[in-house]
Amino acid sequence: MAPASLMRHAWIVAATLAAGFLAVLAFHGERANTSMAKFQPAGFMAHLTVTDVRSIEVLAGGKRWQFARGGDGRWSASAAPSALPPDLGARLDQALGLLRNAGAERVMTPEELGAQPLADFGLDPPRLSITVHAGASTTLSAAFGNANPIGLARYARISGQDGVALLPAYVVEAWEKAVEAPR
Image 1 (cartoon, rainbow, N blue to C red):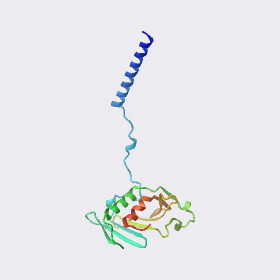
Image 2: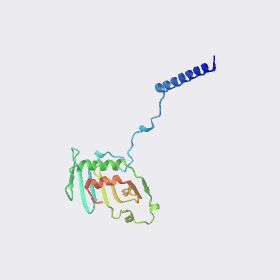
Image 3: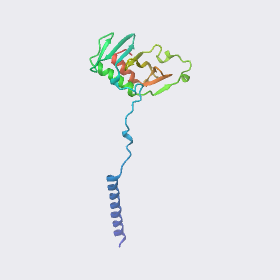
Image 4: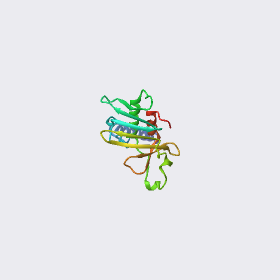
């Protein structure tokens, strides 16, 4: 056989092998499914669902709001200082969902904080605080303060936990929007 004829046959064999390899991969190969991991809530209310919450108390700007979930699942205000937004239930459920799902970006330990006063973080007094009840007892109390220096997180104190947490700013903003509290 001539060298050109031999090269042509070599390319045909190589192309056939490559096509066969691709066919085997297409019908029998499998990639690990790393992008489809089941979502796990990482927030401070991860042990609850949003519908478990029965009542909420919000304090902001010297005002106090109290909300209760009725047997039909809808929210009502038991005490509110001003008119309520028409989409109140959706706002409250969204804020609760973010508090359940979004974890702290960082928690500064008491040792890291040292003698730095909580007022430096906007936590004494807090800019906004919430108390969440899922049953007869308080499930969660949280106080939210100022934004961090780059504005992407807010300082928070969570009942039962030492230190100061940095929560994503959108979590606190959802609570502010729920009651339309001033920033």
